[in-house]
Length: 273
Ligand SMILES: CC(C)(COP(=O)(O)OP(=O)(O)OC[C@H]1O[C@@H](n2cnc3c(N)ncnc32)[C@H](O)[C@@H]1OP(=O)(O)O)[C@@H](O)C(=O)NCCC(=O)NCCS
Image (cartoon, rainbow, N blue to C red; front, side, top):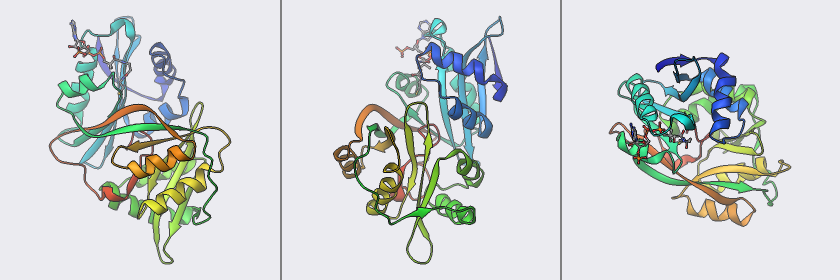
C-alpha cells in the first residue's frame, strides 16, 4: 500500500470509493475540493484507490481535512490512521480542523483532535419568505467579501471565494449603507441545496441572508449549524429546516481557530469551514 497525491483525474476512483461507503455521488463537491486542495490517497498493490483525504490550507496557520474515507474491505486495519497521520504531517504545524461524523470521531480523537463544537446538519424545505434586505453580489464585491471573510476566518480565502462565485448558485451580500457587513452563498449538491457560507454582523442579518437564499430554492436546503447557535437552529427548525445528522467540529494543533467567530454562522461546506 502506498500513499500518493490525488488529482482531478482520480475523481471517478474517489466516487467509487464514496459509493462503497454509501456516500452519495457528490461529484461537483469532490472536484471543487480536489481543485483547491491537496488530495491524498492510499493505493493497493493492484493500483486501486482504497482511501482518501483532502487537505485545504488557509495560509500557513490553519487547514481543513475532509473526505476521509477507507474502502470497507480495508476498514479497521490502520489505514485511516496512517493516512491521517501523513496528511497531518503535511499540514506542518497548522491548526487543523474538520467536521467529524460519529464514525470518524474515534479515529480523530486518537490523533489528538478535540471537539470544538457539536453541530447538526439541518435539512428541509424552507417555508419563510425572503427578507429583501440583501442583494445579489456582483464581481466588484469580491474584494470586500474576501476582506470581510478574512476578518472572520483569520485567513485569506480570496482564491477559494473566487472559485466559489462560479461554483455557487448565488452569493448575496448585506450592507450597512457604507460597506458589506455580511455575505452568504448557496450551492447545488446531489439532492439538496447547501446554504453556506453565512457570515454576518449578527444573527438577524444571518437569518435575512439565509431567508433570501433559501426562499428561492425549490426543494430541500441544508445548513450546518453549530450547537451554540441555538436560536438560529430553532428558527430554521420552525421554518421547515430541521436538525438531522449530528456531527462534531474538531480541532488539533493547540491554537484555537483564529478570526472573529462571533460573525461565523455557517461553513462554505462541512469540508471547508
Ligand atoms: C472512519 C474511517 C475512515 C476509519 O478508517 P479505518 O481505516 O477503519 O481506521 P483505522 O483502522 O485506523 O481505525 C479504525 C479502528 O480499527 C482499529 N484497528 C486499526 N488497526 C487494527 C488492526 N490491525 N487490527 C484490529 N483493529 C485495528 C483501530 O484501533 C480503530 O478502532 P476503534 O474505532 O475501536 O478505536 C472508515 O471507517 C470510513 O471510511 N468510514 C466511512 C466514512 C466516514 O465516516 N468517514 C469519516 C468522515 S468524518
